[in-house]
Length: 248
Image (cartoon, rainbow, N blue to C red):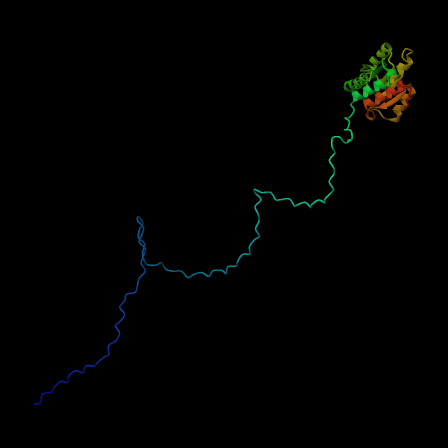
C-alpha cells in the first residue's frame, strides 16, 4: 500500500513589526508625610464640578483722600496785598502826638471842683437816706470835694440833725422806713429853726406828681437817682453855691 504522507505545515513568513510599548504610565507620587502625622491616602478625592465664577468688574479707582489725623488742612492762600508805599518811620526827634490821658476818676473830679469852688468850701450838706451803701458813696464824693457831709438814715434823725447842725443844704430821700421824705419836708418848713434851709429831693421816684408835690411843699430841686451820678450831683451843688439857681 502506498504511504499517505501528511503535507508539511505551511509556514507563513511575516514581516517584523514594531514591538509593543510596554513603558508603564507614571503615577502621581504622594508627598512624604511629615514626621508625626498620619499618612494620607494617595488616591485623589473625588472632584466636584467647578462652579461658574461671576464675571469680575474692575472697580473704579476711588480718589485718594489725604489723611487729616496728624495734619491740619492748609488754609486757602490769601490774595497778595497790593503794594503800598512805605511810610517813613518817625524818629525820636520828630514831633509826636501826646499820649492818651487816663480817665478822670471821681476823686480827681472832686479835687478839681474843690479848686474851682474855693469860695464854697466848708459848706455843710445833710444827706438823708436809709441806703447805707448809697450814703457812703455820696458822702465820700462830697468830702473829697471839700464839703462837710452829715448822714441821717431816717426821717426823725434828719429833723434832729437839721436843728443841731444847721446845714447849708439838705438832700432828702422820699421812701424811708419811719416817715417819708414829704413829711420830713413839711415839718422842716413849718419849724422856724429849719424853714430857711434849702432842701433838694434825691429819690428814685420819677413821676411828675412827685415833683409837683415836692415843689408845693417847698423843695428847691428834684433829682432822680438813676439819672444822676454822684459826680453830677456834686457839680450841681457846686454851681448852686456859686450862685446858679436850680430848678425843678
